[in-house]
Length: 313
Image (cartoon, helix red, strand yellow):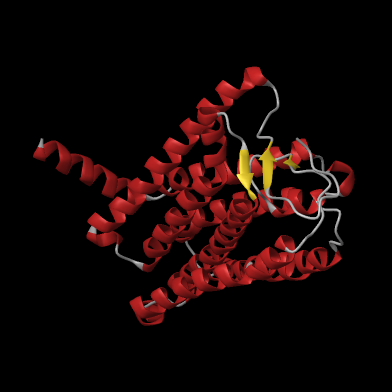
């Protein structure tokens, strides 16, 4: 059922990742597998940081925040794919759609802010190690985390207010696998100029470019400090401490820029959905793998936990 030039829309139909019926089961299994891997990986990180005392440091505190965000973001964006396959119902109410869009955008914004806080943590640890315990105290870390969560959930409110105020939609079928800002905006036949300006000013510059700039500045100082180290072994050792974070940052920002800043000629629904799927599924799944495979502390903590479990059994 399509609704054209309606003054009100009470529900939306989510088309999903693919329209082909024969692909629905494989897609469901793939999404379920990725979700379970992401859940297990991030829950492992959370448990290790809670149980292993030497991981009670600012970097792992922020990593716990990142794991919570990844689990939440993936649950918010991909649960509809799983529910639709099981129930056969791919409709969502207008309120549910707006809520999903708000939660996903807020969590995505929060991830960028937490990664920025982690880059500042690496900057202090490498460039000002003597003052690290004082600068990155528990109170400071808690303040940075709280500020990131509060700011990210507040700054998305204007987007939701404008989008929910649209009175006209060309169709109620969303060619996406969840309710996202751009697909919803493209469906509207209302004047979207205010939302486009807000996306360009606040969405790109404040929510994306500012965290990227702060992260970039932190790494400029980090690289300068690393280059001052005379021995190659010392340089590699220091760079290794921030390589996991840098890898995650590059993965996330490259995906976001390809998704939201691609030229109009290449901005097809298929490519957008593919990039969005990578951003919402692959990145949260890779984050715990990157931090566990490239981090000696996490690997040693995991081995210690496994040995302790064997002794108990």
